[in-house]
Length: 163
Image 1 (cartoon, rainbow, N blue to C red):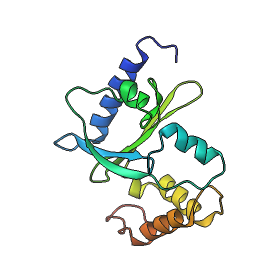
Image 2 (tube, one colour):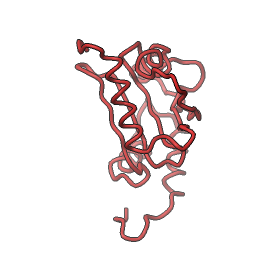
Image 3 (cartoon, rainbow, N blue to C red):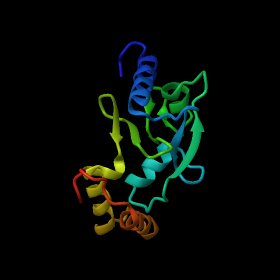
């Protein structure tokens, strides 16, 4: 976190990854995952780690404007992180083709992009574990929504490995 120009560099790297992975559509629109209700990211994390059942997060359609600051003002807004340079969010392309996540780690910012998350073995395994595992952190409604999505997802395209 002692990196000079941290927020500027995080913004540059996030944008390069978002473009390369196909996060934006032709209008630069995409989905942002927000805590349900008016909870901030920090409050949602505290609730999750405090042992209480967490309400599902909501997806909100947004457009990246000409002037933006996701890792600075966005993270400081408390909905895309904890404070400037300490982001925490999930984003997805409108067509579901890529999931991009960013979190504040102990030693730095962690960012990942998952192409075709609906076909990712790791994502599917994680979702199956959520459905099958008893946890005080996951509500029945959330498990039911995941189970319904897993049951209803389309089969893999020809040539792709089956699950």
